[in-house]
Image 1: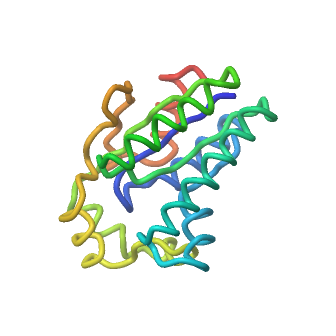
Image 2: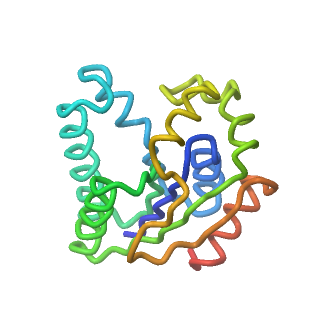
Image 3: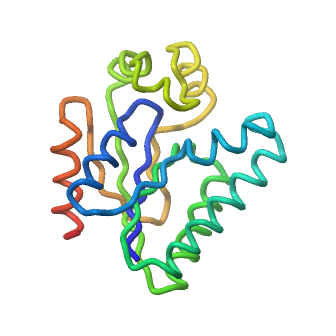
Amino acid sequence: MKLVFLYGPPAVGKLTVAKELSKLTGFKIFHNHLTVDLIETFFEWGSTMFDLFITKYRLELLEAAAEHSKRGLIFTYVFADSRYDHSFVESVVKKIEKHGGSVYFVQLVCDRTILRSRVKDSSRKQYGKIKTVRALDDLMNKSDLFSAIAHRKSFLIDTSKLSAKKVARQIRQHYGI
């Protein structure tokens, strides 16, 4: 299985790009908030139990897809350059490669002013996404959301002035998928 691992800060366009890439490739989408919203039903975001279950479910689902599906998958993630995130990424790679799959990392970045504008978009209301400039700024002040994943080659794309369709085409072309 091919796993496209899209990562970047909130409002950079991960899900929008994933939808366009899915149209081009037929890959299914496993976006961040499928599990975030589920686990927040039971446990507060950032709590020990939240972290335990979000990691467990994501890894189990990704491994099951790698083992039982030949189709590609697009996964979206907010990477915060923390020890937890590095460990999670390495676990994902191990699970996918264990079943003969490959992981293709794509880092999406965007001008902070544009992120602040996008975060208020009504499309973000469907899921429990960050919806205010204040919440976005708080997160960006607490975490480094613009770092590349260490020891993994990422295709870097600035979404500031590109449509999601163009970004998706670039990803498809770059990785030959």
